[in-house]
Structure formats: structure tokens, C-alpha cells
Length: 173
Image (cartoon, rainbow, N blue to C red; front, side, top):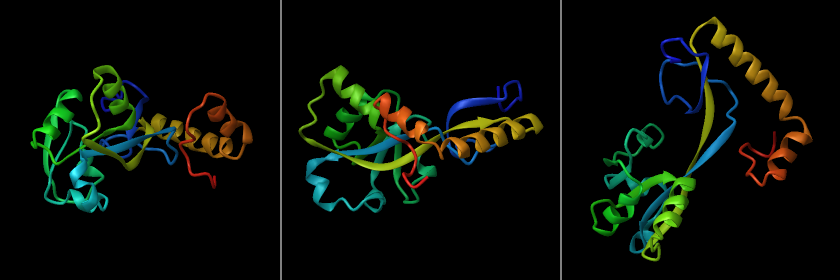
């Protein structure tokens, strides 16, 4: 609807996830993306460089290759619970997913994670994505101006603390 300009914005886009909207300076949340792999690979883990030429999986249409500059043999799955099965079977060397999503899957399916290592990989800001028109541009400016003001208040940080949510911005703001 935003692309067709029938809506002014959509909530929860990663930066430059699509090429048609206007992205603001300020995200409103962040997703912590994790990488999962068999523990025997842990000694060789050096960050994203370890993904080079490896079999890497993630959920269909997540497109993490936009954020990771290493060449990978990419496979996509339709269900998170497939990730652990495919890793155990050696079909994937690594699986990338949102930490919240993986935590939910582990809890729901009672997956035995003992054979696996789960490590933080990257943080992706979550944005409002505005329609690429005059109204969307004006709304983006309002968003950025107001977020700039909010970041200077102690009450803004206190709201995250009050609701036991991680503060999704650098602490030097």
C-alpha cells in the first residue's frame, strides 16, 4: 500500500529493505539477529567472515545478504523449527534469525539447544518506511525532528526501562 501510495507509512521495515519508500534517520526499535551453528564450529567462529562460502539459511524473503557482504550459499526455509533440524543434518552450516523468534521457537518446541551455539550476529534497526511523495517526506521530517527531541529527554530512556525493554539506540544520544 505504501508503494502504491495508498498508505503514508508502514511499521517495521529494515533500513533499505525496499527501494521505493523514504526512510527516516531514526529507527524506533532494533532486531538482534543471531547466528546458530553446531558447537564443533565454535572454535573457528570469527564473525561474519566465517560465513564466507558456507551453507547459510534463514527465513524466506528475509534477505540478510543485503547486510552481510560475504558470499554465501543461501537457502531459505518457511518455518523456524526447520532450522535446528537442517543444522543437525548438516544441510546448513549456519542459520541466521531474530533472537526473539528463535527464543520463541525453542520455548514452543522445547528444542534441545545443547549441540548448538547461538551468538549475536548483528543489530538491525526497525523503521517506519514512508511513502515516496510530498506527504511522506513531510511525515518523515516530523518523525526525525520529534525523535531528535525525544532522545534528549530522560523520560524517553526511562520509558524503556519502566517496561523492561532494551534501549534500542546508542547510549550517547
